[in-house]
Image 1: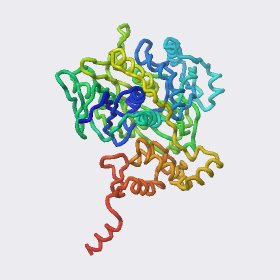
Image 2: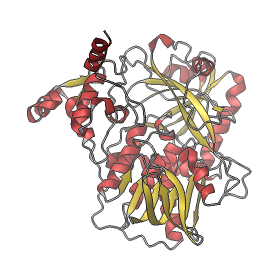
Image 3: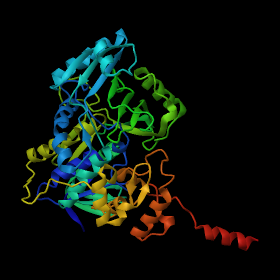
Image 4: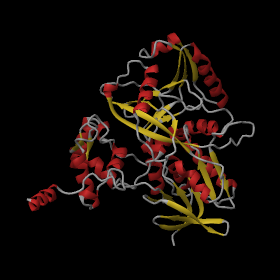
Length: 498
């Protein structure tokens, strides 16, 4: 019987941040994730924005943790080597009818305690951003807005947690709780039973199903809201700014923004669905994204698109813990000491920005519940990022290749990803064992050719390093295999037939 102090369900950004925060203390910790890699759910498909905090309703937990979380990202990114840029962001009002909306966001931001807010008039914003819709009427600028690599934002804290003693099990699905009387003493999974003093439910889209297994918050439900996106080739079309429209009650609206990798991205739209696994794109949905983006930047042209994707927000129906606020879409974060359960649910946007503050909030809940958390003397908060060949100078590249020739073999030509980088990720503290896991870590296969050049070589490297047959290599785990048989097997089969 394997026993831990804490089990965290879910290896998205919230679970990752909590794992890293708990690994600071003298506790045993297990993270279980049903997918083949970390960051494969809601955290993997979003707009990568570290929101300033002017959008959430003042007084809500969402507003409080957004603003606190935003301020934590500079230190966090420095310690963990996460690509992060404090770019600032703009909310663009189009036409006179959106002036009130921009001014309302400014007031909310001031009330939420957001620093660096500024209202820009039409002439000012058009001087700064000449590609904007000429019908712009007013804009809000927030200097504390930023962009981050969401994959590294999840991988880095989990890797730091593992290096500080935490254990992670992938392809391990939560099935039920194990009770001793009314107290939870562990979890049943597809890989067996694991015992613990506390279970932390950070299961994202499935957090409602998990808590219902413990017969708590039966009224709480997660409704997936799908958002679709286009990504553009940065060599053909690129902006450097983060542009929001004036939000609606349903969402923050369709953005035009850049990523830390320099690609322009537009989206998301927003529509509720029932299937928590449906990340398909639709013609109607993508059309709405294009039309929404052109409202801000009319010159956007779809001929420069290199990829499309869809993500799901875990939208909950939790009432705000603030009794003075009539709001039913707040974060649900609570501790049930008698049960041994912590729930973190309904973490839709700005969940990525809020995630480090959510982790602090959970630690404080545990301390308030008299859970003994003694700090480790040897906790190391630093996770050194692995080398990226494309970011080096020619002299640095030369020295790197002299020390390790595998860094001299380019596997992905579009993104300049080398064999050395791929091997380092396959043998990292949380090993990359699928094509998409390598893609999220190194950015291979994300350029114009979308993996057409690198795929055969990557399969060969994974096969060799993991000691697997090439037909066992998958795109994202489960049955997503690339190859079904060897070419010679087909030739032999044809010969037998003839």
